[in-house]
Amino acid sequence: MNNLINKLAAQYLDKEEGGESPPQGRRIDPAYKYDVSKIEDLVKTQKCLLAALGHAMKAQQGFSIIPSSTISPDGLIGGMGYIMSVADFRKNLSNVIEAFSALTDTLEDEINAPHWDVGNMDNDDLDEDGLNSNELNQEISDIHEMKQDPTGWVDENDNTGFFRPSVWSYDKVLNEK
View (cartoon, rainbow, N blue to C red):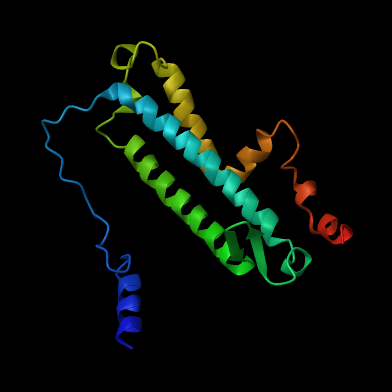
């Protein structure tokens, strides 16, 4: 009973079991000088994470329409050492999406934080081998669009047609039986 109470309390307090609460603020020395040329690396990281989030969400959409009985007579998938239940696979996929979402939310806040002052950067602030300020602002605009609809971004940037909605249709799965 104590274990259940502790688990519920940890969930209520937004803590990992046995962990600490996430920080609610930052205490940064006002004299700290940010290397503004590193904002480009943060933006690239964010773009990669948003692409991964979109693909993970697309995978979840596709996998969720497959009746488990059509892919697994024993409720398990995998083999050669990597075996899990279909239910655990679905749960793990949801956890991946939640983790990507938390990571992208965190980087979104960082990129838009006043200490980077992205809107007032000029080319002298940035790495000479990297993006210029206009290109950086365009990349930031792109990641804002990606964040609004990660799966839509996957659809728009799929040159192969592999991720088209018709490929994932429930009817197609049923017709393959």
